[in-house]
Length: 448
Image 1 (cartoon, helix red, strand yellow):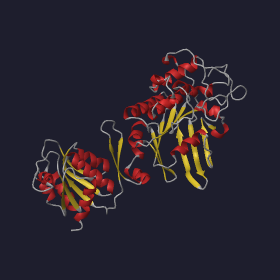
Image 2 (cartoon, rainbow, N blue to C red):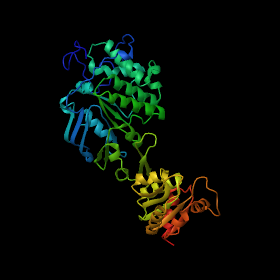
Image 3 (cartoon, rainbow, N blue to C red):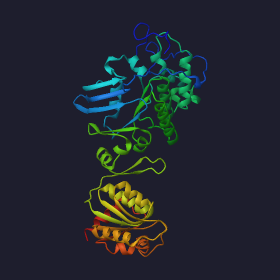
Image 4 (cartoon, rainbow, N blue to C red):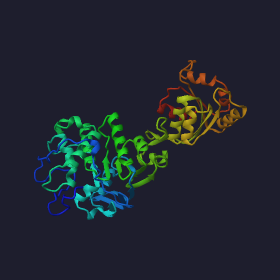
């Protein structure tokens, strides 16, 4: 911040929205300065010592007679990206609005940089917090560059023109958000996704240490969605900055966030590192769905697959088969509440990986070496103890007679027939069995 700029009070520009245009003339943008190399941008962000950038303690918010959230506790530290996840209507946007003082909590405390949010002026909040809203509709028609320049409002007095510092921040923000080519275009003439990136650029130009984002990738194509989250991750990794974002994509939250806070049923259902929070039970309870949580092979982070609720009686089910078809069957059985096991399969097989993710037993053998007698005996015991055994067809298997011919081909391989012979109930399913047919096949085995 320049020393010759006035503080709150005399000569400052009051505003309810730190990113909004001047209340005196909403169509009059600040004067533009000369072009500045984005690499020369000075650091105008604040730091708050050991205080977290944001803390909510036992916060409750209601609208009329409707309780939205209660008992919310969370912190955003410097160098941390916190993801808010949860079903529609869980209160993610409400929590973000409470963090900026836009919504006054009915109970609890919100602190920004160690100070109660209620004690800060809108201008001071704007120096500490920059927001990217979910709604991208703007009630005024300005050029894109002018919209981004609004991010400098908290750093300007009423009669201040943009200086070198401001132009550097604006240029760097537009370059980072990839909106430079729209600079002279009307904000009403760009697409919803482009508008989302313009608002992100406005927030970056604000140079606040805390970034709040409400569904920042909702309107973006996959390329710009990844670029946006990479940009936010880079913003956080600078060390003195932090961010909190409401995110619908659980896989993206797991990939980019240091901590995930699950909002559901009126409060915080779980909070912590993605690996510990995004479990099948937590996701299933929060989203009222059946979930399987595996591992993304490219990133190593949790990968969530949700299925619609099914009314099944949990059973112990052993799976005979290998590869992706067997892996998919193990995952779906686990998500539905069944207790699956699988084997014998080669070490490193997809079905063994799915079993590990589900916390299920997998009997394995070294690849390209036949299973030991001990492994076959273990798999045979699992099939005997299971209430049903599924023989799953293999991709590319030779067709046998009947609709489940590829399952018959599975049973003809190695020790599979010996394992299946120990089954109490043997159910054959093709490699391409769909979710509903799979669960129906298991249920039907107990109706015979």
